[in-house]
Image (cartoon, rainbow, N blue to C red; front, side, top):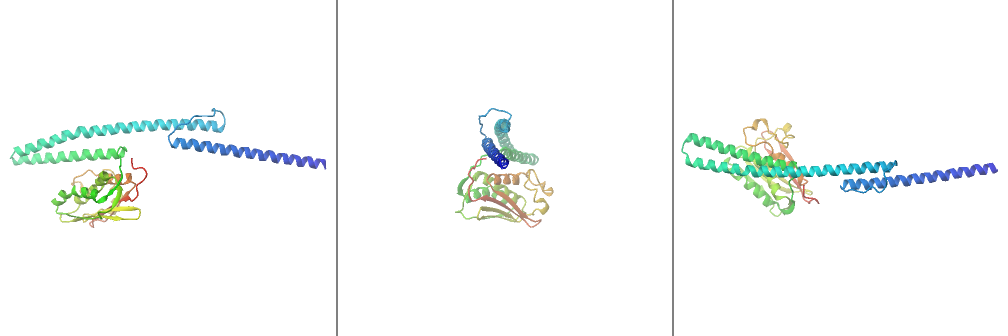
Length: 313
């Protein structure tokens, strides 16, 4: 009987010890998870923390030290990226400033020479030079815009404002070119529509869609710019009666420098649609296309009806 009591007591003691060890282990696991979670939160918020506990051979001591080193390296890398972006921003600004004046002077000199000559051959050469100068100016400005987008130096300033004003400026910028081809441009937009958007860059995005429509629509054709208010997004549509785009090429048209093989005689360098897509994405929107060969094209620019918390990029 005494032996049985002894065995029972030993079993109970073993059970108590096992329970205590399990409780201790669980507390250590919870403590480790809590410390790791706090450390990761600090890393994600790009903040530093002090190593309160000495670095020792415990699991947390080793993990704590490595996380601290990881955070320090990450912060250093982030600082380097910010410095590089600032340097690129300054370089782009310098390029823009340094090229603007020489090109403007070249245009003035060409105008003066055209006014002072009556020789048909000379006038022909001067007009070609003027065309190439305009093309160079367009190329440089497009490259600068693209560089700003890709380096994140563009600041998107979303403001709740009337969309019709933004669209009106985009249309006005293509009217002269459309008139030369006798193209009719129709606009269907409720003037009361308010939309949180960056007016300057949205105008640029819509202009690129309209400019493409004018460029690839045959004379006497038409272009329709329309706006539809949906539940989550406002859809801006540009529909033309142009040559259309083959289905197998539609996935490529929004990439940098893409141009369809048969349009190389047309002006452009193939970044207009790329810029439009980037501008849409910076405003939490997106673009789509619906087209078929010889049946015209319709491009859709979707912008959210509600502004996100952060509008800067």
